[in-house]
Amino acid sequence: MAKEPIRHMLSLDDNEYTGVILMKNYVISLKTATDRREHIINEFGKQNIKFEFFDAVTSININNICAQLDLENLQQTNNLTNGEKGCFLSHVALWQKMLDDNLEWVAIFEDDVYLGQNAHLLLNSHDWLPEDIKLLKLEHFHSPLKLGHCIKTIQNRTIYPLYSANIGAAGYIIHQSVIKSLFDMLRHTKISHIKPLDHFLFEDTLDNHINIFQLSPALCIQSSRLIVDNHLKSSIESERSARMRQESNSRTFIEKIKREQSRLLQQISKKLNKTQPVEFQ
Image 1 (tube, rainbow, N blue to C red):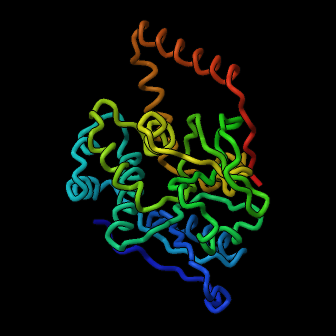
Image 2 (image 1 turned 135 degrees about the vertical axis):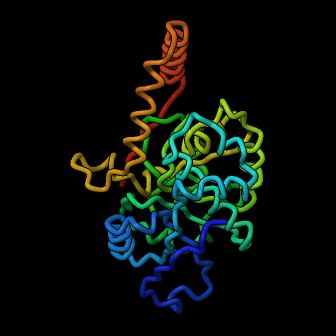
Image 3 (image 1 turned 90 degrees about the vertical axis):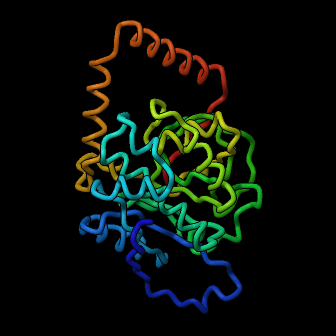
């Protein structure tokens, strides 16, 4: 398993939350990412939100972590760069920690995230979460989205069923009970079908009977989608862009036609199905 995470506990009076079930907030971050860690300490500190850093998996640990988690397919795939594999495994290792430590609910963030207004009202406890919601996306990424009917409104934010892909994994709340399903789904994914973590979690799951929900307005957003001159840009983004360019250049003419057909069908589906904007606030 990954090393025990470095803990950073903010000065929050626990007595203030007597009788309230505290949320466990984890921020995935490389131990060497000092700028990003300082950003998170400031960002969560503004609203006095407790959190812990979870040390991200580095390329040197990929093979060991894959072996420990029985993820030979992830280790062997050529679909992802080492940076993308490390990102994927960081989330999965944290899911395993939830099982090992018997943590019922965890909010998981990446270290380039910005939080919205009054985020502390939802991130300092989890007693507001409906029992039937096991995977809740907090992040703004795509908009508009195909959403279902309102499940619950709390602190001027509404929970909706999510019916369309919404990649990005910078902020979500996950329940222990859905993790076993995710592990089973991942371990049965063919090597050639492995995708980046955010596509697996918020796209592929839609076809595997795992219910996903979206918070709107979104509670958080990645720095790359908020700030033009982004000083928190990661090497993973550059690696992914390079991989995608290489894949595009290597596609056959028939593959390019099929890809364009798929995009066209998605666009038609969005027009035919009612969508709603999901903004960051």
